[in-house]
Length: 229
Ligand code: 6GU
Image (cartoon, rainbow, N blue to C red; front, top):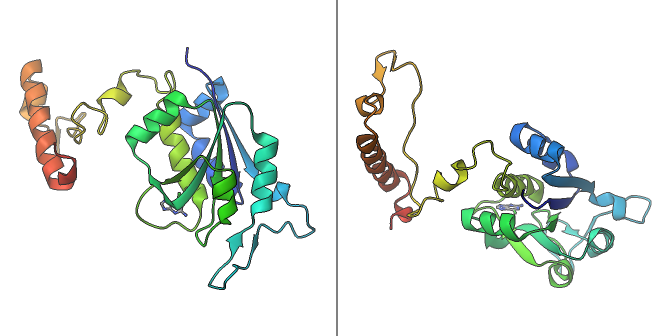
């Protein structure tokens, strides 16, 4: 049995995080209690009449900056003994499969803060955050989508969440040499004249393995030469 992972998300767009995580595999993991995901509206920790979460930047500049006080109040309410606080921000360390594995193995309780692209008061980073995470070199309007991606990739690695226990080991970026996966096929063997490679129908396991390896290298050279050892 795996250990339970609890995740609290703080966002001004709870629905953006909730919808993708309630589908299929992740919804089941949540139902079965392998993981407990709670998505909170950051505005619940505001104290003013307008539930204000942002304000103008000191020193000028465009856009608004997210205020520190709702984040501090929320984290103080939610944190437990073994909590790690993660901020989703394009300024963070770039997320990858290795980080997903580390989070899934070592986390007990995560509080995930979703920033807005214009920025978040830096005292949140200094005073609350253990790790700043970016999901890639492009800018999203808000960290909520990034949080859903981050959570999906971690939760699916928890033993028992995927039906087949083997599959996370053999997939791209997780195989020993970290190259892309071979393409796959299913019935029909001939679809409108496009045929499944003969070797896959042969039942010859050594030959199939060799074919998969060769085509994986070929496709990696074409799409992701940076992954080649
Ligand atoms: Cl974590 N947030 C935002 N707003 N944009 C991003 C991102 C995060 N990661 C990549 N782009």
